[in-house]
Image (cartoon, rainbow, N blue to C red):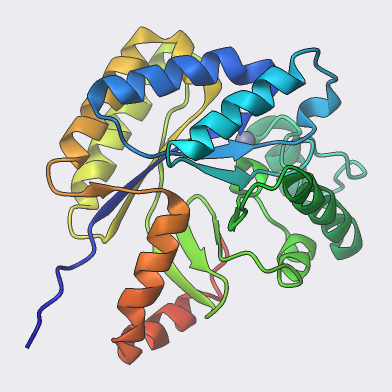
Amino acid sequence: MHQTEPLRAVCVSIHDVAPATWLQCERLLRAVRSVADIPVSLLVVPAYHRQRHACNRRFERALEYRLARGDELVLHGYTHLDEAPRAQGWRDSFVREIYTRREGEFYAIDSDEARRRLRLGWDWFAQRGWPLEGFVAPAWLMGEGGWRALADFPFTYTTTRRRFHLLRNGCALHSQSLVYTVRSSWRRQMSCAWNAMLLRSLTDNPLLRISLHPIDASYPDIVRHFYRMIESALEGRRAMTKAAFANAYQASLAGAPEAVGAGAALAAQRE
Ligand SMILES: [Zn+2]
């Protein structure tokens, strides 16, 4: 009987892709390419911080080039701004004001507002004729309204910081993302150590996720570190876009009904 290889993938993504961040994104893409010429997922924000930018057309041509070479474009919010009314409780205030610095666009909005923003993003991709399979909420934070609205769109997947959610069969795979915190020197050192530990702890996981942000490009120690993380991941894993992983994982579950059951149980944990 034909034995299929177990799925072992690494997805490298770049968050907050927009005209204002494109120079830094290009630096990240060059650094990734210096490890290997692998496909990446670009998390695009159509109206990033509501800025109007003069070089939009050049930016869009650059994204079309990335699409043509096998990268994926993912919808990553619409403005990347938390514009909902101010929080009341201390926990929500901490998450919204300090942890995300008011960038968790889908954290506090209701389902009508979430649906409106998803529709704007969906149409923005459609107007450009760009394929769209994935949605990732800014700061990976999605409130109840966001989850409800997402169910009304034909996205294949979404991701949170800890999980990869296949939206068509309600299944979620635990796979914590490697991500860098760069606000101070000690945070950079801590996040490098933490990410190296995560890389080891995810050895047996079908999916390893490495998430980069434009600001990471400004720190040579971070660039050197993610270079080594990608290099090490590629020793036993195949690089693919998130959309390619979603489809491959879905196909691998099709032959393993017990795995779907386990995944469905996890789907309730939306963090
Ligand atoms: Zn973001």
